[in-house]
Image (cartoon, rainbow, N blue to C red; front, side, top):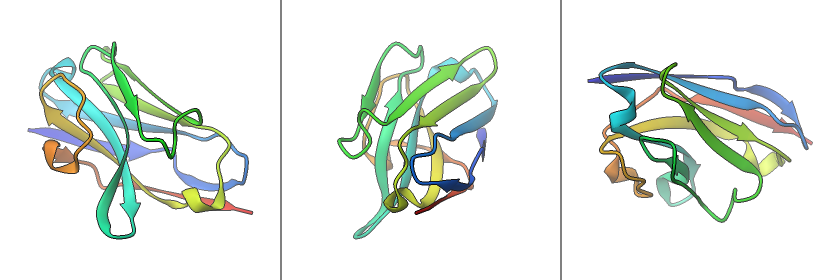
Length: 124
């Protein structure tokens, strides 16, 4: 079992650069690939980015490529989402997720554990 707790959200001005954190507790953190998601119309959650268990492989959705950066510190059991050049349409609850497996996956159903989410509101 893995517990995930997100933090770092809040009210941000357009163009801002907040960093979200996801702290994990439980078993060996490096055994889990990690992802970030947010709600999207027509879906429960939209895939944004993911990182492999070692941190050596990352993948980004086109909607955030070049603006968001995922990273992890396995010694601290933490994954980060650096968000740059935020737009009002980035306003959402951002969820961290972990999957049983070290390889990156983009499907929501591939993830086994979810945090409660952290709200990011971008003002224009």
